[in-house]
Length: 390
Image 1 (tube, rainbow, N blue to C red):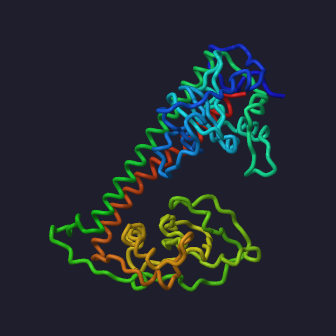
Image 2: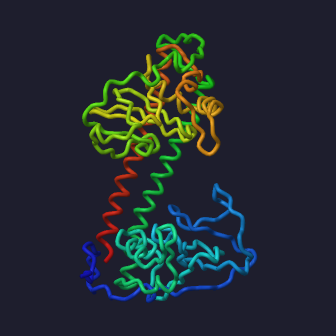
């Protein structure tokens, strides 16, 4: 039985939430678009955004009078992706695709409250349950079905207070995301200047380091070192395990059930370089205790000198472009380990390598610290969404 009030609530509100349906809060709007109005698209992670601001440009697929008009504060969702959270608020009067649904809030409805509610676990479940389709990629949530979704509604003042509180959390998340992006851009600029030698470190006594050399990767590292026999049990790292250079949760498996690609027995300090679509730079510096094995989808690189320096070099534009020149395939460009080993890298004096590695690793530490803050705040918000709604 669904409770009549959430677990976590502002103390000034005592009345139970009233049972009803989504149609009690919104009405479906089919107002036609008009020339001159900006066109918006629904995204999975950013809500409603101007189509002309999207990196992937999309041609207008309908005449103005065939598009739908949304007023500021209307809720717009993608029928095929609503159950995955493809929904947003219109920030201004605009036009959207006729394939979307536009919901106009009724007088007792705070659209900002529902914008938060749609992100909750239970609401996503209901949005999926009321969608129709043979398979998940064909599920559609029509306006009439949306209107039938059961829910409990608080008073408008309580809706507004909840929305305002969660809006503060969102603002903090946005500020952290901006900070993280700025740090990333600063590091990218620093890398470009360091590896192009626009900036050079000096020795501790103030004298210059010698000129840099160029050496092939196979000279300064061992690529795919001969691995011992697979251990009986290990944690397996495949191409899906690493995201933006961060290792996600990996399960322990037994050797007899391991996939054939599980062959790279790892040592601390090894680098896993993604050989398919290397432009993604989704590589891993492995620095964990325990028994781990990597997929043959990675090149296992064991540096002979400064492994931190080498890891940073592998992410430079110059190196990635040189790798791509040797790749085969278009949709999924890939390089083999032999060709990878022939790619040349800049190779300064060992002490200068260390200074470069220290500077860039320091930036990585700062970026990761902000990323950890984002993750903690996101987890905190998920908990709020579960406890502040019925």
